[in-house]
Image (cartoon, rainbow, N blue to C red):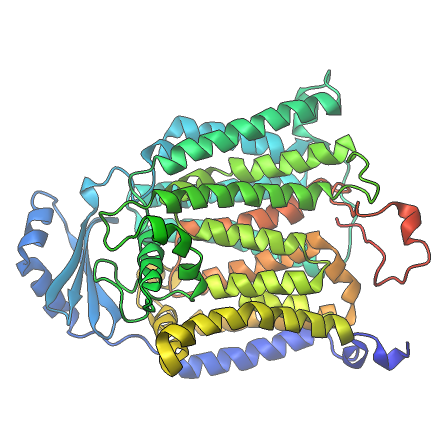
Length: 563
């Protein structure tokens, strides 16, 4: 192969840093020029007066001692009015045309915002925190990995603040931990490889008399126990999040031959703002348990969320422990122990149990992303999975650029063909049920995510979106720098830990700069960060073939170690 035929040969004169800065600058300028906030149907004082006149709102606020009110647009036809006592939100009211109440939420009557109350119990959260530290921590304590563990656990504070209705503060509380993980993951992905300082897993430290085989047996039992806990808490939840009802209602529409876009029941505001796979995936459940309002059962959707958490744990295990050898020989016990600890750390991440109990589709997305990382060395399969994830929720489309960047020739053609293969059936559903306007109807509905107004974001919490386009440009700059880096050094893409870290960094950036953020989104990024930062060095090893099988292969096809 000639020098000019190698992947990235034509871009070697381009510095990834320079490319990232240029992309960030151009994107920030363009986004600043395009930035606009939704126009409220009526002025805030008019919306507040309309809300106070609504009988149900007056009843909700009786005896609440509210002392602050904030009104703002959701979209050009809807305005939201929130009533506070200090920093705690008491009630939220959605007004159609700024005048007619369409939805009202009394937060004072809620034990928890959504999900199963058991998952929020201090004893449960404390036990999960302890287990997370035990599975992910190391000795001695002065190791960067333990700081990573602390950063991940700090995100629980955001959940607890939201539970007690400190909405603005809960969003801001997540910023330090997420920013730290973004920087760490970006450095892990794009920086030079460094030998970690010697350390010993905390579990091995507290069980000095046990050999790895014994610990593996204990961990297997613990995995089964924790999976059963998730099943009991998840399926028994009585307060599923509105996202689950939305996708189930959309799936019911599909069963009846109608696209959800523009045809959703009025109970959930903008329940049609997701890509088509979000609804298609739940159609088998809708065949047997259709959902047309918030009073119908969504137990099947809750079970899917539990299954997704377990599948994600399996993907973490496989990515960390590696595959069996070609001869189906037993996996090294040390690798299996490392994989089980990583999988249990994911299940023990305290916000996960809460998130699973809400039934949100974000757990399904997390499983898709983890499977994509597991398949990263198979570009066609990885591209197909990321494309499916993008058709489920939009953010994973940004990761497709990372998967495609180091490819060329047949491998690139195969990956592109895989993307087309998984996309055509979904486009077919849109056209079959919605005609020539089916695709545009979906795009119009999804566009709400990019123009919505919300207090539940970093920019809403600080009441200033001036720097938002600059921050969004910086995230696009990170993507641009990563693409150039992977074109120049395609061997980096064979390191699953690096790619998991890079994916986590980009997704965190997208979350922090978005129009809306919820703690439910933490499950997208924490397992990816865990695979890259909290997996044992040397445990994430390519075990797909014995060492002698790689002799004589090209560097592109030989297995590579993952940090």
